[in-house]
Length: 115
Length: 114
Image 1 (tube, each protein chain N blue to C red):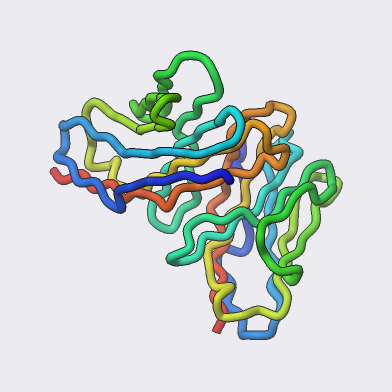
Image 2: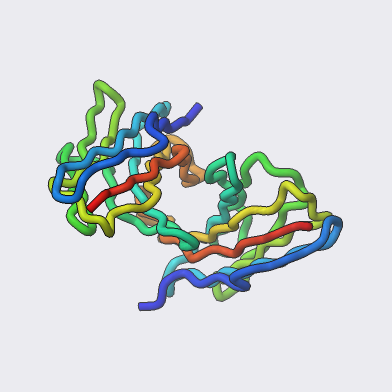
């Protein structure tokens, strides 16, 4: 069965410091991996995706993510955090053999960037 | 380019009533997905429509249903509302033919059942 785990409910980081939000996944076929961000009372905004190719993927707002097949991980990173990055972050996976195209989401990680 | 739109923003219903939520996809997108974001349960896949047909549904009872219109907009209907149906309902659209294409989400409809 497909699944996504975000082991940290909350990540705290000081502005200007690097941040990492962790995600691990389990699928039967090749994974299609996504990161989304949700601000209060808003829908989800797409940040980046990994389908194939380079393991380091760059996305919106300076975020990047590293795909690690052996560790089945897709951690979200940013070299220098901003207070405005404070939000709820979701990792999602689609199983490449699943013709439903549905996304399976992790439970979300709240990022708090302090000034 | 306009994003995914949803209406209404908020909806308050009483138990046993029916709720209708609406979604307009990004222009050119043929697929619409519905997700439920309930407190403590996270984001769960509800339904997928493409080219007017229901293609897949998640683990929800039949009182959750919907349809997709010729212009690719979609409607989610929830019958016989229960208190636990209170949640944020998110609609997303994508180009299904793009395979690994990302889904773009609307702002959601917050349904409150009293």
